[in-house]
Amino acid sequence: MNPEAPLARLLTRLADLVAAGLLWTVASLPLVTLPAATTGLCAVADGWARGESPPVLRTFWEAFRHRPARGLAVGGALAAGALVAVVDVSFALGADGAPLRTAVLATAAVPALATALAGAFAFPLLARTDDAPRPLLRNAVLLAAGNPPLTVAVWATLAVAAVLSLMAPPALPLLAALAATATARLARRAVARAERAAAGARSARPARA
Image 1 (cartoon, rainbow, N blue to C red):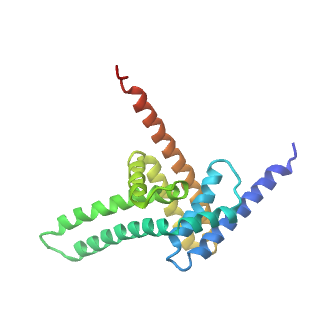
Image 2 (cartoon, rainbow, N blue to C red):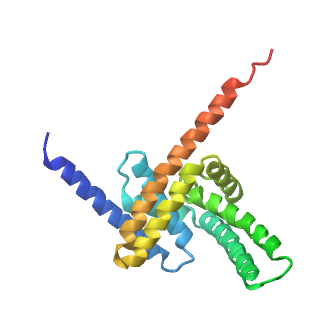
Image 3 (tube, rainbow, N blue to C red):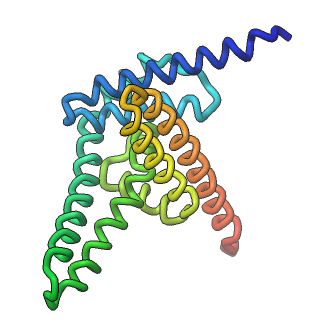
């Protein structure tokens, strides 16, 4: 066995990670293209999660080019949910002694929870499927709600990547690619669990006479 082979594979993967992260960073600069860029990065990461070595540029570009409208719709829905939650919480915290403060905070929990659940797996699903935005978001919520540990792991991964990016901004492309890779693996585990559960439920149904 060539002792240099593992090192070569490691360096190749590192180069691919940096390339994918740089593509995502540049493609995200207009901001309105951020959802499509994230979909492209997730498409590359999903290939890595399958144990493949997809061509980074072609895979990114295909996902970026073919899913901009759906990505924008999904990203817009997630941004709207987050915005509603932030506005409600800000209003409630600024209204000391207001009789509806507790009700407003409780109301803010609904869009916050829905956004957190949907956001965990929305873009990995967007990169893998051709579902329309509404069923895709519904499936993302169900997938996240059915796999709380994996959902927490996704958000923990994204939080760590965000903090490290703030501490070392030049590392953002690499950290984004690493976070996307980890999220793709977690998403595949969640989907596999859901498929096994669905198969078990079908096999447990009594056969019709």
